[in-house]
Image (cartoon, rainbow, N blue to C red; front, side, top):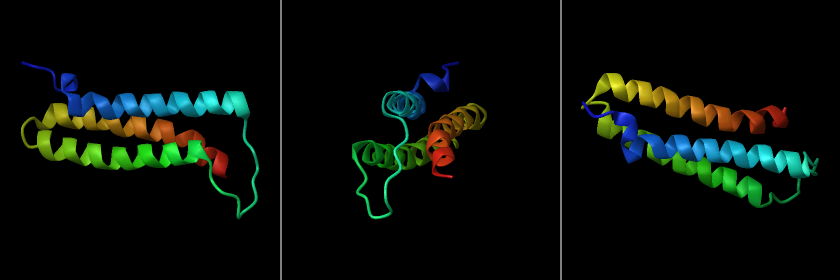
Length: 98
């Protein structure tokens, strides 16, 4: 039995989420949080976060459509890992927005 986590569609969203989490934490450690006015333009880190979130919104449903009907038990486990990884990368951003 071949593990589903070894498939590219399964581990790439998790790897991208962990990379984005590392990027956010390193950025915060180096530059901190800067308060900007309401009409200030977002810079590159915000754009990268938005691009990553868009890619995740495409990759995870693709994984679900492809693998959930074929192998539901493993697919749900991998899907849970993907969702936890996305939420862990989003947490610092949403926490700092409050």
